Amino acid sequence: DEEKLAEIDAAIMEVDTTHVPAGPGESDAQGAIVLTPEDFQIELGIELCQTPEIFFTPSIIGMDCCGLAELLDLSLSRFRPHERALMGGNVVVSGGSSRFRGMVPRIEHELTSVLPFGSQVVVKHAEDAPLAAWKGASSLAAASDPILSWMTRAEYEEMGIGYFKEHACSNRYIATPPPLS
Image 1 (cartoon, rainbow, N blue to C red):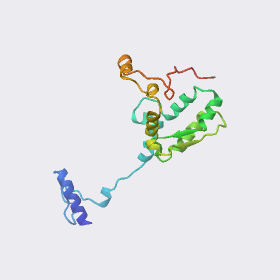
Image 2: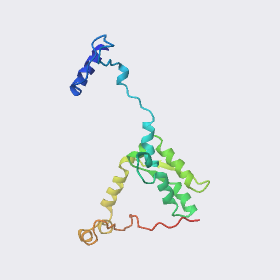
Image 3: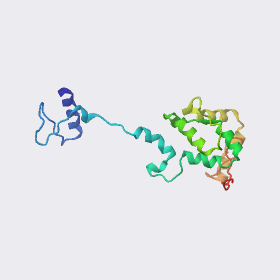
Image 4: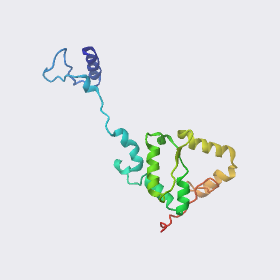
């Protein structure tokens, strides 16, 4: 243990020139800090649980925006109750963040709270979750008619950077309707 502490003291001295290492057996040397193995342990508390929570409650890191649960509710509120129930029964989660422990059960829970009572909620991981979006876009680019899905230089120069070309696979802009009653 003394050898390990001496090695650690030497490494600290390279970075912090004011560090005063404790000699062997010294415990009360003036200005010296006695290092023990416990001094080099890191306690992990709730941090591992809080990281995925940022997706659902972004305000915990100071972001003023809605979380994933609110986005699900907003998206589903645009449809009639029977359509919402159908969508809730076929949810695919993709992206690297979907691999956080407990993410799928949490999304199932959030969906259950916004769907009509008794709706079946089925949330599945994409087959290769981190690369699913890239693979889908790659397939679209390889298989589709470029005229339908790509922006030409002439369109870009005419419309500018904010232009979003609508095609069979795009999201159309629809003004947010008032909630259905």
